[in-house]
Length: 304
Figure 1 (cartoon, rainbow, N blue to C red):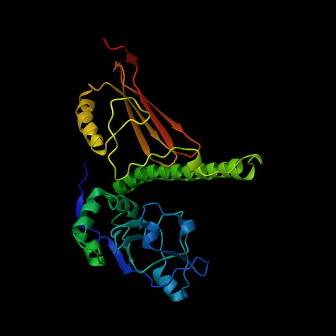
Figure 2 (cartoon, rainbow, N blue to C red; figure 1 turned 45 degrees about the vertical axis):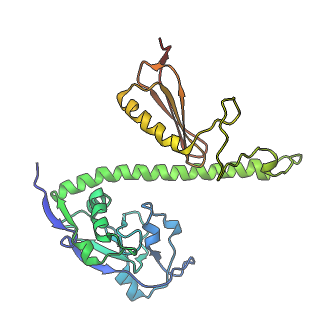
Figure 3 (cartoon, rainbow, N blue to C red; figure 1 turned 60 degrees about the horizontal axis):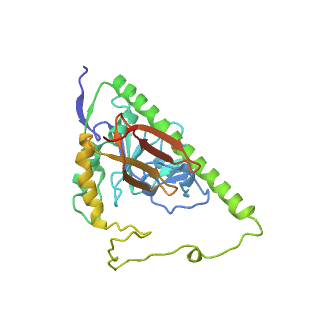
């Protein structure tokens, strides 16, 4: 096995610099203006990145190039990172609350470093910097002290290539989901707004449903059957604590269905059923909203 050498982010950086101070503008008055809010959620959407006016001299100073790494230095997203990719826009500068690290590519592959900066090791390092501060923040020197172990450069490139291909597939799935959501919105508008029947009647939801509101009240207990089964909040935790050991031991006698609904919420239904004889099968279906529906159904035989 090749030897991995210990270094720091600062030692493998040719240049470290703070960003450009200017107001963002939604109109194309200059280059794209990359900010903390654009990289905060881990998935950068270039079509939502604003612009900023800038002189030619300042553009040369703050322009981002392929392999440049920017790190958020203030706020709740302190430590959020982004590495400029080959296919990213070329006309981009970075804002003042970001710090740029230009990696010496004779020592390290910036895309290998990018994956290290997405690891739990980096997250733990950032948590140590932020501590219990009400207004988190860090400076270039603190980020530069982050320790990294590097394999030889060819191995870095090989590792980054494999991880990068997986990242590309994830990005593709995100784009496909977005396309499916847009298609669903278009169909919804067509069915229920543009092409709705002239004989349709408009009304308020309250006129078609029965609302049972027990907020701040204790629902009455009864042994008689009613349309409203009572599930107390504290029972949910007890059910979890009771079921987990059985799930781990394989002795649970329930049928589990997990459905990811149209708003991305998961609903869990557990019903007494027969003893499973084989491993449950898992089927994933794409819905019209681009979300997955996961169902687990064991093969059953009657319990003796």
